[in-house]
Image (tube, rainbow, N blue to C red; front, side, top):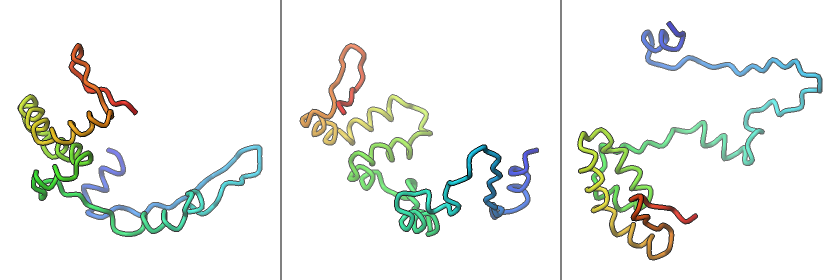
Amino acid sequence: MLLCERHKKEKTKLPLVYNLVIYNGKEVYNAPRNLWDLFTDSMIAKQLMTSDYQLVDLQSMSNDEIVRKKHIGMLEYMLKHIHQRDMLKLWEEFLIKFKHVLILDKEKGIFTYDHFYGILILNY
């Protein structure tokens, strides 16, 4: 059994992880030794990675709330309903709920619809 799986069964908290680099290269090791120094903005990286994570609880959100988010709402809507058995019905509901966003994107030239293949093509 994998160590992580065994730990997960026995405990509810994650184990501590100790960062250790063993280097045996021909050149002098010159990478930053501080993890935060590897990021472009170390202050923001440290703040983001050490504070509480952001939770988007899709099951607690109404579909209307998700639809108001437009593009990110499209992703959230599909994730929320991904376990629905009737995928054709899901796509139909999706296209009805996000029709206004898709029409606006089409008017802006963000995508075109290929009738032959029946797919949306992003124009980025």
